[in-house]
Each structure stands twice: as C-alpha cells, then as structure tokens.
Length: 96
Image 1 (tube, one colour):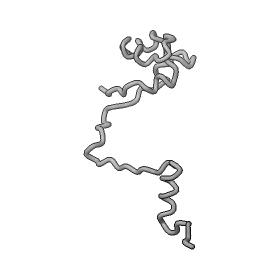
Image 2 (cartoon, helix red, strand yellow):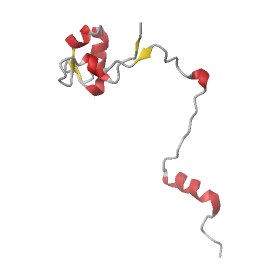
Image 3 (cartoon, helix red, strand yellow):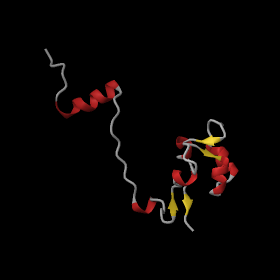
C-alpha cells in the first residue's frame, strides 16, 4: 500500500494552496523608484483642528488654505466636517 502522506518541503506549499491560506509576499522597491520626499510633509491634524473638538470644519480648513474642492473631496460622509480618518486621505503638502 502506498503512503498517502506527502513528506518533505512540498507539504507546506501544498497545504497553503489547497486551503487558500494567505502566503507572505515580499517586495522591494529600488532606490530609483522611491518618490522624492524632500519638501513634502503630511499635514498635521493639530494644525487644522484649531478648536480641538475632533473635527475639522470648512472654516478651520480655509484658515490653513485648504481649497473647498479638496475639503469636499475628503468629506466622505458629507457631514460638512472632516474626522481624523477622512483627514488621513489628505494629499501631502510641499514646504515652501
């Protein structure tokens, strides 16, 4: 009678494929493909949330020169204010 068990290093990949388990994927970005981060910063939440109520209003955003178009594009739930999650989608700004 033949042995029905798979032995050796083949068993783990076969189990992963058979059961659809996630496999680790490693990627490396070459230095020449990395974006130029000089002069680009993420806008700080504390700078925009001046009254520290946990939201950024259109008025608070306007003080920091955020355009109404950007504000409305970030306001995903359309409540007229940005929460911290919505604000994390803000594009980076360039230092002058």
